[in-house]
Length: 149
View 1 (tube, rainbow, N blue to C red):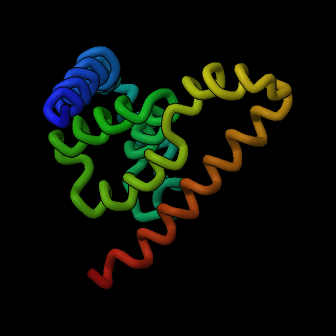
View 2: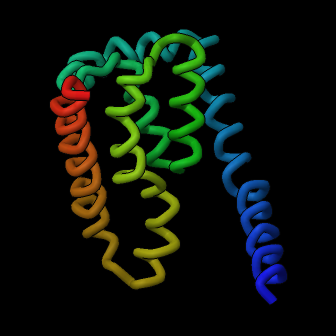
């Protein structure tokens, strides 16, 4: 029955949220809080400021990309945490979102996909690099088109 299919899909979605998404987002909030307390967030912001300025972002936005490289949920959590602290604004988030999805969860997928497909580990760097380059291209495109909206 249609209702049974719906309920089973809702149950599966709830389980994914509880078991996968929420832990990653919580991890991201905790990591950002630790970085703030230790002063490492300011250091990372200073170090990455020249690179992130190329796409119109503050240096701290690099932590969003680092978090998303580990997990997309983590990247979103970092993004929301920086937004709630006033470090990022809506325009910054619009620039970052495509990058989060283009390079998101590479560490997780390396084992799940590349390892399972028996891709030679020496190719991982190139494959990761392509995703990172695509993410920066997407951020540049977003920076160019956002003023038109």
